[in-house]
Length: 335
Image (cartoon, rainbow, N blue to C red):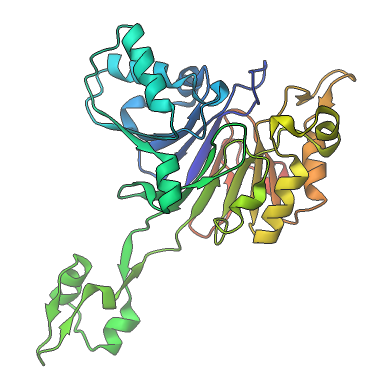
């Protein structure tokens, strides 16, 4: 699985960071998925090389503008580029109405492709998947924010492979029968026994899992969903001292709050994003440094910590190891 950060700033863009957006894909498949679409996301996509023609689904965490103002532009640009395939949009209440209002008042009445809306809030309440295709299944998990907000848990659906030890234990002879089982067919052996594919097929590798959280001031709400997750991507808008200064009314997380939950869950990798504009990658003495967030998180989390940057691309390989792939450095060496 691979992830490209398209926007990592909270509330408003800065010169270095756009507002929220993340592209996610599975290995060498050209299809991909978008989580959140703040204003300017389609400009980021032009730079990252993601094609709107290959976009399978969009997942919006909540209705605040820095997470959804870019959505109508993406829909319109896909239409102008000739898209024909349906596009699924998984989002809480308000997003479909917002998109329909923009279409009504900006002469975007006719789309060349169908839009399919799925309510994240309904699916989360019913513990049902919001989306599934041949590559991934996605569930929504309710968070705590000023408006309904959700995290999305992506689980890979690996290719299947025959378990040779089980085939040999069942005395299934090598040859055409193995091929039929691989294709999902029930086979009958010479002695009359029937072998079901489920008896001898297993995933070709261990499924990879990623959670992408929306705005949230209670990271502990994700504790159960974090089971067997490789990577948690979560907002860390402030450090603890800034939260004490501004107060809790904005309902955001600090780096330490997220780190404590990732540590409790045993999550190996933590990516922090959605940084307040107070923080700069580098700069004048009167600006806070983004590295303060890493230092605070490291006091509570023993895994690898990423401070997300726009256009950084990470990959979880089939062994579960996370690496940055745009400069070939491993996350532990400076991700």
